[in-house]
Structure formats: structure tokens, C-alpha cells
Image (tube, rainbow, N blue to C red; front, side):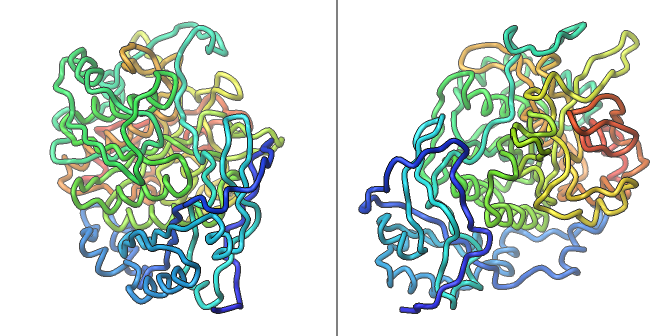
Length: 518
């Protein structure tokens, strides 16, 4: 057995704020972990240029089969992990070359020895979780092939990004409170009306809650349209488990109803996974590499401040989103609902992850009303520190190439890229657990943009894919968005062009389609 060990880069973990250790994990408790491996081959600049650096019409995307053949993990690396597992009495549950995962199962005691960590139970405001402190290690001869180890810690990793409009929740009085159905929002934003998403698949990532078919039928009947085809995919034994309207069901139904109403002809694939770093990662990886549903746009409305994630997890998500770009899959992610601090009380500014990943289309929020002449009146959504669009600059990801030419030099990856109506006071009429309600939050903006992408993909006859380089490049000056110039989210202020409150602004669907066709 190799006695020389090395740290798994980015694996440092600290307890949740205000969490208290309450005792060691039962040593015979069986736990599953995911070991993520390096790819057998890495992208070249020429590869990336084929699917990112060109107009949509000239992009060459890989099929999922082509990707699997070229960028999977190697069988030899998997065999080395299997040998390592045997040394520590760990069972190999399964492995996937294309997802670059090996799932190991063993006792808490065996896993603690295998990765040189101590597992403890912690109590915090939301319950009890299994956690660890510090770095993980592996034998030095494996450190180059192991990119991360996930699942030892099972704390709730992400939170929803939606807010229900209730009298007690309205923080700032509005001159007029209004609400819209998703088709009304689509019309205001001039989404293409000649297509409905037929032939497309929108993936939704959900870390709790569920859908009720009767609600979906009733809701779409009220809109006067047939409900979309909704399929569920279980990841890591999670399931469609409805709870309550103010719980995760509000997120799931908001996602389904907004995306489905904007693109009713599309298939909606809902991936349910545990709310852990391992579950979240596996859900995204499953959706990206799903050769049954073949989604070409993914909507994610869950996240948390960058400071709450490990470096290995953020790196793994960004790699997955880069993989998605190679397949022509667009990743739309809510930018957060807690202003420029993202709800962190350390006096600093924070952005939400995974929206801050460079290969994500980060979706911020506005407050939308319509003037008497039919024109839109849109400002940054900000009803207070815990009811405002996320936005700011990453402290984890450097400035991506596509943002390097912004006139005001950002300090890191700037968030968001785009925006849409998110204020609960101008929110979306939805149905959750038998109740009609109005919901806002950037959770609504991610599926809104995902629905728009599905319409564009159908009209173009080809996936839009990785939109960011185009938004900051050839689309600048093409008037494809409503520029939001008024308001702030705390530390960040709106202004002409891109800003760290609403990005480039809310969509003008027909002009975006025209510009992408050109």
C-alpha cells in the first residue's frame, strides 16, 4: 500500500456557519462517494473554437457519442481507482467513463482512512448533517488522475432562488402591483411566436420537492394550451416527492410552468437529485450526457454564495458546463435573490454559484411594468437586501476572455450576463400544490431564458449553445436586449451597456433570433 499521499486540490472543507459538532459518525455507517477523474484527452484551442468562437451557423458541435469517444475518462484510470478501493475495503458501485465518475461505497471508518479525514455529525439551524474539516488526500500516484471526491459531506449545498408574493413578504411598496402569466411575459419580450419548442428538450435540475400532474393539467388548461410532455429522471435515488407550496415544490413548479408555457411543444425533463454537492454535480452530469432525452438547454435555479463551495466542486461544475458547450447545450442559471452580498453577513460582496461559472448564462432580475403606451418600464429588481437580484464579481473565477473588453475592467468573472422580470411584486402567476400564487425571483428568469433558447433552437434548426461569447462579441450593438439603466442591487449600479446588476438586460426575442440568423 502506497504510504506517500498528496492533497486533492480544492478539497478543503469547513463547517457551516454556526454549526456545532455533536459527535463522530457511526464507524460502520455505509456511505457512497463519487470520485471524479481526469479526461483521457483535454480540449485544444481548435476544439473550443469549433463550438464557441464562431457564429451559430458555423459552429460544429459534438454528438454525445462523439464526446464519449473523445473526452471520457480512460479505462486504465478507472482500473487504478478500483485497485485503490480494494486496498481500503471499498466496493465499486458503478463507474461511468463519459461522466468520469467512479462511485465507491464503504463504511465511514474505511472511507476516513482511504481519504485521510474524520467524519463528524454537525447540528445547525436546518438540522443535522455529516461533515468533515480540512483537505482530503489520496496516494500520490493517484493525485494526477483524481480531480475531486464528493459525498463524504452531505450538508444541504444549495438553496432555491424564488420568492412568493405575500403581503407580509412585500418589503417595499410599489405604486402598482401586477402579475403576468409566462406567455404574457414572452409576448412583452417579443419571443418568436411562430415556434413552440417542438423537437427540443429543456432540462430542469431540482434538488427537492416535486410536481403534481393535476396541477400541471389545471394550470395549462387555464392558459388555454395543452400541457408540455414532462418526464422525470431519478439521480442517486432521489425522486419526484411533492411537499408544500412554500417549500421546494414552489421551485419545481415555477420551473416547469415557466419553461413549459414559453415553449409548450418542448419536452421538459426534470432531474431530481439529493441536495448535496455530489447529488447536484451528478444531476448536471446526468442531464448533459443523457442520450435518451437529449436536452439542448438546461435551467438551474439552485445555488449558494461562492464562499459556501469547495474549490474542487466549483472546478467540476465549470468543467461540466464547458462539456455542455461542446455539445451545443446552453446552461441558464439564476443569479441569486439576495443582492450584492448574496445573503452573506461578512460585510463583503459575494456572487452566487454556479451562476458565476464562466460557461454559465447567469440570469439576473428586473422589476417590470408596462407604460400606458405599451412600452416597457424596467429597473433593477431591488426590494431590500434579501429581495434583490444577485450580481457582482467572482472571487473564484478570473475575468473570462469574453468579458476582457468591457470598458470598466472587472475584477473577476462578472455576474449576471442577462436578466428578466424577477420582482415578486411584478411576478409570475403559477400554480403550486393546488394554489394559484404569484412568484418571483431569479428562479423564474433561468427557465424563462431556457424556454427562449428552446424556441431559438427550433427556429434556427441548430442549438444556440454557448451564448456568452456572442453576447459580449458580435451581438453587442445589435439591440437584442432591453438595456436596464436604472437601479442597483446594493453595491452594484445599473448603467449603459453591461452592468453587474442585470448584465446586458432583458431579452428582445425577435431581434435576438434575427441577429443569430445573421
